[in-house]
Length: 326
Image (cartoon, rainbow, N blue to C red; front, side, top):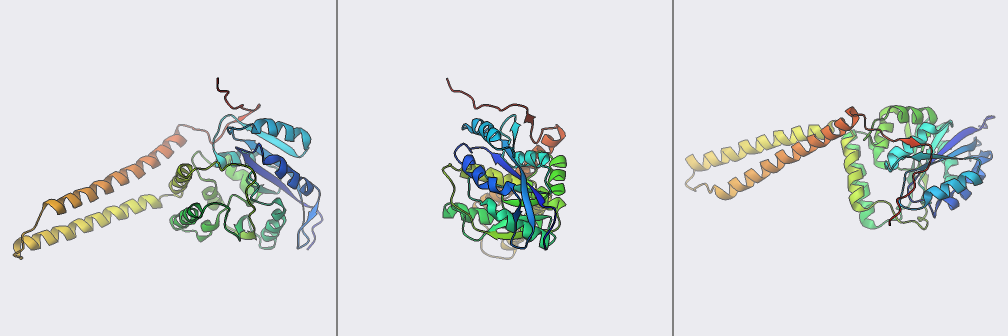
């Protein structure tokens, strides 16, 4: 099927450490700003590339100014401070005007040419959201890849949506969905969780990842853990239900231990030794209580951030330069 009017694509790239990789990535995108054909005959064109400056530690701000002068299709969104990858992505979504919005990383792992295949998947299958599904392992260490798969499996169980197992930062989103999410999403909400809330037709498209360009990863294991914890907190109330289940299980365990102790005291000749069992029981219930209070406190912290009006992001009219050490 050949369409007469090309599908317009807006590409959103959150920029944190893109000083070395962005010029190469923009060279790859530039040919896509003229009308292209997908394998099924759909025509599309990249109408704009929105680079969202998330105030990283390098000289990305200067590179963005150069790229904006070099390419007419480049638009730069300046954030007032570092808000994180997902808020930066949503800031770009809010500014996008295309029929479809593509989010892509700055490190060069994802090939812009694959946008055509993702568009084919969206149009032919009537999808609102298409995630890239890498056919080869990500170019990270084995430990990070295992932890990533485990985190996605846990999240899919909590949300109750198996498709969340394969979410990816390379996405093609219906333009209306993307702009609606950016308009109404509150602080602390994980981007992919928000998309699951408002998009019902979700699919995947097979791609192959490339090696990262000359750019260090912006995520340490500690940051990835915080990323995962924020994802858990924004999945809804299921973690709180797990606390209720933990409390019920604790009560049942306490009843079983109490029954064993009474039986040993009144019907058995073996004396009931109390110190070890008492220490175990007290430690278990204390840990369960503190864990439950900690999770509830985290939920309250997220709620307080929303109630107090903490912004998801703030757009500035000029670049925020990195601090100069004297």
